[in-house]
Image (cartoon, rainbow, N blue to C red; front, side, top):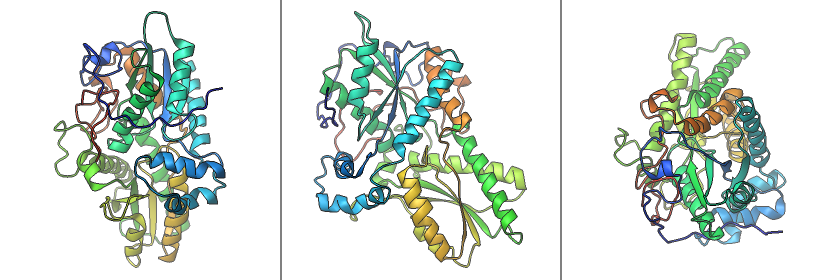
Length: 411
């Protein structure tokens, strides 16, 4: 039995002869922003971050997450406390398997006969295992195996876009499958109605619960809706998205996309109550060294400043697809504790998870590529969407040197 592990990062830049996009299907190799011709795939790979499955996994998992940064285990153990409190098990694994099963059912309902594999960036099953299995079980003599990577990240940023594509490239190199496997990645979908509507539904329900539990609440003054985004380095936000492709001004694509989702949700709140409920974009889960500035304000700092100004908050975990570790620890424990200390009533909205509309949206991303859906017919609720099928050169550049990446124009 093969012992799988996270591949070491590659520093090489791979250029395939006659192709503008490395290890991509012929339809994507042309480099058009949207692939509006039908594309044949052999398999789908649900692609996620990964998480430990027990106490013995925690430090090795965190070593994978921080690979190349030379962080000592003593420092990692300080971060590991969140996982230790949950028995060393991240809920993301079970949640992704539930999403995989729901996607398989929706594919079957739509008569799409494609197997779904599951792979992670940082823990078992790794991308190498998923890609290897997909190739062995679906390869056709004389042509590469074509995989559609359905990435569980809705927004544009290095950690949620390009790093996945770099890790796909690392896996292909580790497996020596550059010429035998082609991987196209799913587009960003932060403004797809199937992602947005579960947040709208949950926010409206939370406000209604507050109003029922506290009959004296003035929604226009006493309640504030906080959209939480996973914080990232300010430099990563500045480089997020497609260079010069959208009018993000000085905001940065990552932040602008979260603000856009917040605006959609709050428009629905105004339609329901005919008032403007205050709202703000805040951040959580900052995990970098102190000398590197990250997006702020932190949700806990913001909650402390609300004392005496509001009576209740509704927290919407806008970045996240499921209620995994960072949602549970950072919001359900730490942020709620901070809110309680400030005397604030607290409601946290559920993530999309396996909500039927979200599952349907994930399958629609597959269908767009299978059918070559024209961009004018793709679902997107803001001026920034729909996201591109093929990332532009330099998309979501990180702080390090550009490395080989699938799913986009070189470099």
